[in-house]
Image 1 (spheres, rainbow, N blue to C red):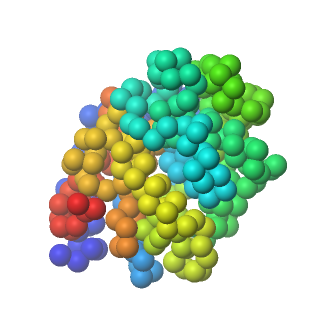
Image 2 (tube, helix red, strand yellow):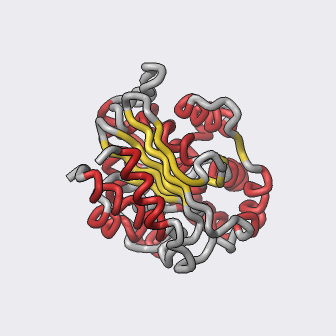
Image 3 (cartoon, helix red, strand yellow):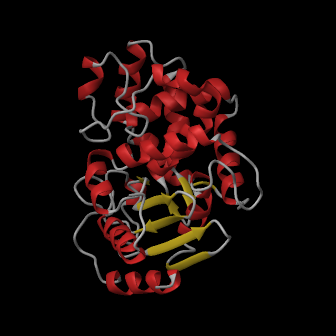
Length: 304
């Protein structure tokens, strides 16, 4: 079946698949998002973009941004990075403090909040104007020059960042954070507030399907070894403590955010972004996961 027909079929089947979850109302700025919003975008390496639904509407990408900052840091630090953050699934909630004391301030992986805060700390070491560097990187990957931060979302996150402040201070007590906690939280809340559409997200993740090269420009942003590792981490850790079930059902490396977005990749073929704000109990878009499961089933292709 043609890719366009698959996307339209899935969108039609799931257009009324609502009412089973909650929006991320613990961040006040996200509580007013239309819960029935739904978008699918697929970007292929040969330059095609196929979309359905609210694909031009921008939303807060939240933890999807952790892939961008990890890519920025890992290309500079290489294997040294893994002295500061682990590579194993956490088995706990994305904002949990439980494992940090037992593991002496080394977060289990870079996609839980504690791990992402360590990555943000290293980003500040590497890039003096970190917020500018992050947004420039995202614009470079997507080819869209007006992508930016949603200041109202960033402020809302800053005002409710008590758990992240606790995580950062706790990690700092073990010496695994170098910069001021307040500076790290400021950069982190801004990176999570980046506002993008599914079309922009799908295009921005194509470098992970093409061995680290932006297909539209030919520019290399990561080496093949780094891309292999980024995809592996997304597969094993990208949907928090639902990552195993996501790999089982969907079979693609992916990363979710509590804004309702999920992006996933089939190396050497395509990337796909889905947005549906209602979240399941693990903080992932339940309609997004259902969409991606049907996508790989209908397409007959996954990474397995």
